Length: 519
Image (cartoon, rainbow, N blue to C red; front, top):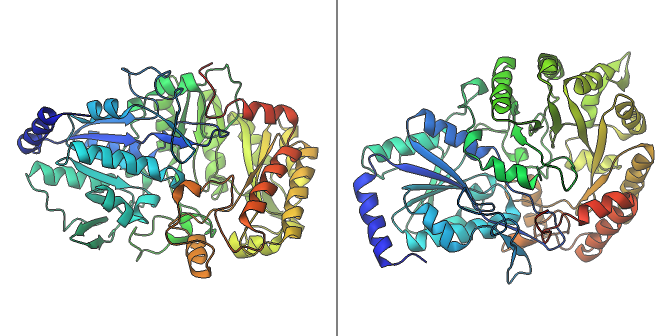
């Protein structure tokens, strides 16, 4: 830990230099079960904030605690998992190293968008505040803004309630004026005594071309590429992948109960309605692609929540990228219905779309089939598509025919889902593997804070208000009092994954769990 001398220095530093504040944006250490694949975070939110701060003239750096910076060796961080009392494994820099890197910064911003990583974010906040109580600690992300009390109790000073590119610059500008009175800022929550005060977001950026350019260059890219475990895609263990993520839009046309967007569509909500679909222009997307290529990026993962919602726009973007010689993959932003078009009242596969995907460099695509049961789709998934009107087998074969490798995502274990319905979905996935699907992922629906499913789970008694966020993993059922009990659901999910997928894929995934050593 840092001693009294350093704490005294911290107080002097804050008092003297807040008129020119320095920002450190932090990805927390990570935690994984021993049988999970450990992947760095590197999500886009902090990159936009860093871009906004840099554009406004502030000094800003990014620290990913899970991998460290140029002073750290991956053998001491990412590939040195430490057991926790919870039975999970902590991945990242030591506390001492974290405090060394935090010391010279005034404002610490910590992202929290993944509920299963809450404990690691809270650990980091407490660590920093205990040693440097005068530093201003800001948090944001859907997890933070829907668990405000937990974060304030850990020591957070401000929680951003919405997209924070403008908010964080406004905070910096107030610090430049030698004040910490943030009470008039929109889009934040803060605590006075035991009371949490919410200042709703008054407006959001509708034209995404006005967003700052993400600061990809501030990421520890060399370390990410050495690890080569991006959010999406499956790569050989011994292959280095120079990858990065991008978003061409924000928001989604659907409002699925298990997604935070289900509660982010209203302008009157504290976040200002950030769930509404907004897009970047083709010119802006090309600018970002060129930036990534200049950094040496070879694989680009598109993280849109609804990539194909405006299909003609998307096809135009794809055609504009044909000469870029890229390798592209989508992570989670497509919907089954968007692969079809209406011809004389019939839904037929949109072959033009599939061909444009391959032409531009898409090698893989994840198809979110979600469930084989129309009742579940109607109740929890915005009635996205009609199971009996869409030929999923033909879609898989059409993708394979044009050279597109496709995998599938499936969800089993909704609160009122029956055993027969779960069996239908597992059989559905098995038929897709037989048709050429590369692999099938099975997810237990998790009632993440900020989603409609969370509200349902609390109201109907499927989730205790004092739930443990460590338990909110898609590999196990986090709900209680469901039609199929959570222990049985967890075992059903595991067996489905083991029996539906091919042996070589199972071996590959097991070989990349959290205890895997550096190749």
